[in-house]
Image (cartoon, rainbow, N blue to C red; front, side, top):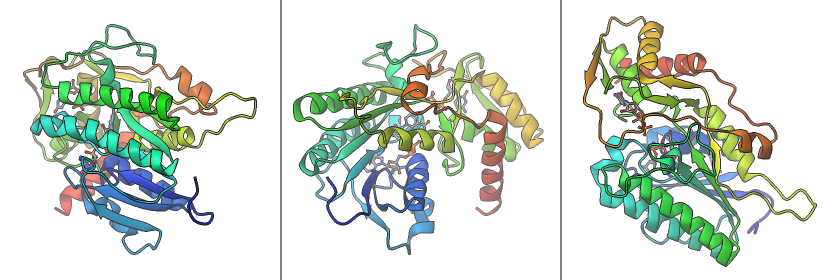
Length: 326
Ligand code: NAD
Ligand code: UDP
């Protein structure tokens, strides 16, 4: 429910993180008033510095494990560390962020009658026995492993979103995000794209975990954020059908082995770095590719338009500039 006037007020939790800050940029660009809530656990105010003097932007340092009272029209819940290194650093906190954070944001949405978006993940599919992964697949997740704090945390968040939707009539949008990369990833983020680019630019060995035969499908950040906005902006089409609440896969279906990615990064950076193999972490999924048929149907033919090489070029430029200025 719109509180004041015509300008939409939007809350973005995790608004100073990699994806959150790109989302904030787009919302500000289209004229919304944005409140970025973040505890700066993995994010940085540097990512939203460009908006600091904008009267349509507000930063609030807050941990979503704690209840929050604000007046907004829409909520995007992105707060949660996303890199395995970071979410495993304090796994109990990761679970709390996923579950208590979801409950707090859903209660806020309930009080405000606000639409709420959840940044879920392809990790809900675990190490998938079905390939590519469509939304109907229930997944193959270890409940007690080192990735479980995140995988199971995000699965329970989805459960909470759908229970609030059924019981409290909350308007929800649950997106399952597949590996996304781009500028503003932290140089020590630990995820594969940023690791390889930083290693290549610094002339260090590229660290492949296992034999590099595992696959991932990499989506450039602009394509993903475009999908977020289209999903959140869906309105009923007038024939009495309600909007699809999700889950909805968002990602780029082009699949690469990690070894292919390493070679591509070395050739695109012109680096003399070598590739070395380190042990594969436990429960590391062997394959990952989204089936995006549903997203294409629901989101007016949305599809990722930026090929890996183009996205990598922009990301390499970003890190090149960042590392020179550190
Ligand atoms: P990120 O680590 O860059 O951003 C997460 C942000 O949330 C950071 O700014 C961090 O400080 C903040 N945060 C963490 N815990 C918090 C808490 N308890 N209270 C308030 N703020 C908190 O990660 P990202 O890649 O931008 O991911 C954003 C969201 O998207 C996450 O929920 C993640 O699970 C989801 N996701 C991302 C990807 C991807 O490939 N980037 C894939 C699947 C899902
Ligand atoms: N990976 C790797 N070297 C690195 C970082 C990651 O080989 O320096 C591998 C990792 O084991 C996984 C894949 O790359 O198989 C993607 O890892 P990332 O942490 O980016 O994302 P996720 O495992 O959550 O998909």
